[in-house]
Image (tube, rainbow, N blue to C red; front, side, top):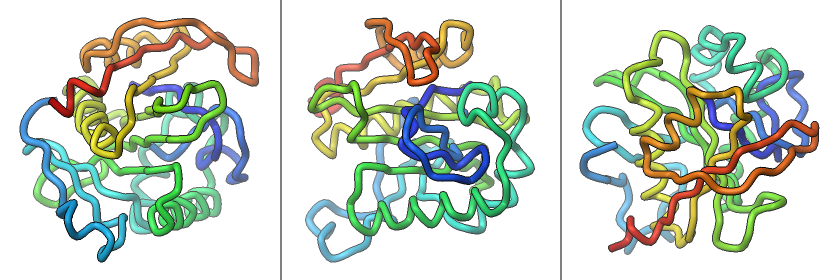
Length: 220
C-alpha cells in the first residue's frame, strides 16, 4: 500500500521539510495520456500534466487536497511513508513546495491519485529524480493509498502510469524501496513489473529492499 520514498521532503509528520526517506503526502493498464503535448511543453506550466489510464487519473497536488489527505491518513501511511502524523500546516507547506517544483521543473514530481469523474483523491504518488544512493538515470517512486481505496489495484495502476511518465522524462530505471515487513507495497512493485534488487539501509538504519523496473520497455 505504500512505497518507501527517499525523504528529501516530509509532508507527513511534523510539517518540517527535511532530507532522508521522503514521506510525502502521497503510501496499469490502458492508454497513457497527458494534458500537454510535448511540442508545446515549454509554453505551458508543468503542473498541467495529467496522466490517465481510463480508471485513475494522476495530476499534481493542490491545496484543495489538504482536507482529503488529513482525513485519509492512517497508521500504515504514518508508519511506512512519513514517520509521523500530518498537520494542516505541514501538508499545505508540502503542497506549495510541490507546486514550486513543478513550476521550476525540479526533481520532485508529486501527483494525487484520483478516481471517478469528480477525481476524488484516493492517495498520492511521486517521483524523485535526485535521490542519494540512486545512480544517474534512476528515479525513486513512492506511493500510498487511503484505507477505503486499498485492495482495488489502484496503486499498481498509478505505478505503471508514473513509470511511463518517468520514461518520457528520460529516466532509465524506476526504483521502489520498501522495508521487508511492508508486504503490500512489495506486492504492488511486483505486479507493476518491478524485479527484486539489492538491499540497503536508510538514514534511520531500517533495511530497504529495492525493486527495479527497466523503463526502456516503456519507450518501445
